Image (tube, rainbow, N blue to C red; front, side, top):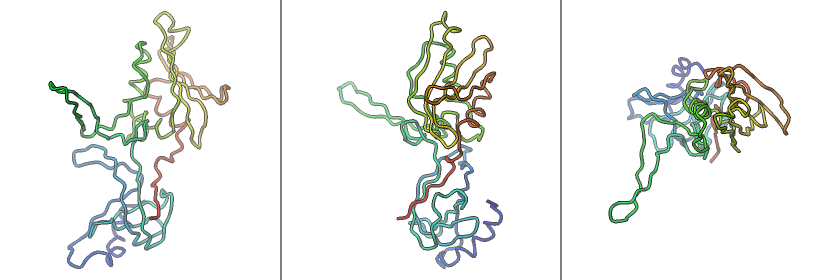
Length: 259
């Protein structure tokens, strides 16, 4: 979507829906590009409701509910539903999520007990933090711990998500792992395995550490049979290779529901 063209079209498209006593109007564009806060952090937008006031070949313009002069511009190529003018809709842009389905920026909660034995809850919210932890216990094997840390911290190729966000978007579930003793490191390599379901691949994905080469390998299998194996991967190539193998891009879709 060309932002310059949209900016030039919006005054005419929204004129009839801006109160006469407003000096101007505001708008946000949703086209799959990540939003950045004034402090430079990536932010995940909240769902919103509104009324479709105009449509073009490239965009759908929604007047935000409860806002006198604020509009949202949706990339027509990304919406799951293209409603006509006048339709009331709920819009859910992409947000990074955890494996439990909650938003990745959900505040962390901790229950504590004071000196009188009364329980209380503390919520902690770190600005800009949308990290996602794998749903597995802390392993004893240092190499497996390192692999888990790299999946949780290294960016996906899009630069917005981490690799664990990519796994969430691929529907990763049913995790299992190989956590060997030091003397068994070569005979039973450390590995992390999970199932995914995307338009690119449905089946089992295994990431293995190859001790002799100090590299990784990725295996795809279905119904117990090996479908594809990629060897000689450095840690910095894991995100790119997993995107190629299992990421279908559907996470970019803007979910639109009629109200």
